[in-house]
Image (cartoon, rainbow, N blue to C red; front, side, top):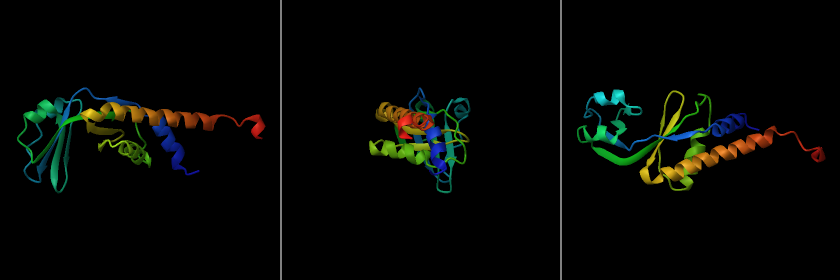
Length: 157
C-alpha cells in the first residue's frame, strides 16, 4: 500500500468542515492598482490578501468589500468552509481528493491554504451540498480505517 494512503485516510477521517457565518466577496485588482489593506481586515475572523506578480486578490466579508475601491473583478455571494483539522505539511492527495469530489458534483471552489488548515470558498447556493460531500468523505474514510483496524475474521485464516 502507498505510504501516503494511510495519512490521507487519517486526514480525511479528521475532516470537520465548519461553515463561516458571513457572506464573502472576492476582489481582484491588477498589479499595482490595489488599495492598501483596509484597517477593518485586521479585526476580521477570516480575510485574505494575496499579492502575486499579476494581481492582488482580497477575500473579505461583503460589508468590507463594499467599502473598498471598485475592483477590476468582483465575485459576490461566496461562503467560506474552514477545514478545522490541522494538516501535516507532507500530506499529499488531500486537496485533490476533496476538489475532485466537489468537481464531480459541479461545485466550483476557490481553495485557500494556510499554515496548517485549508479553506474552501464556494458559491452561496452550493455550501449545503459541499458540506454534505465533505462529511461523506469523512464518514467513508472513518469506515475504511475502522475496517482496516479490525482483526481478520477467524474463517478468513
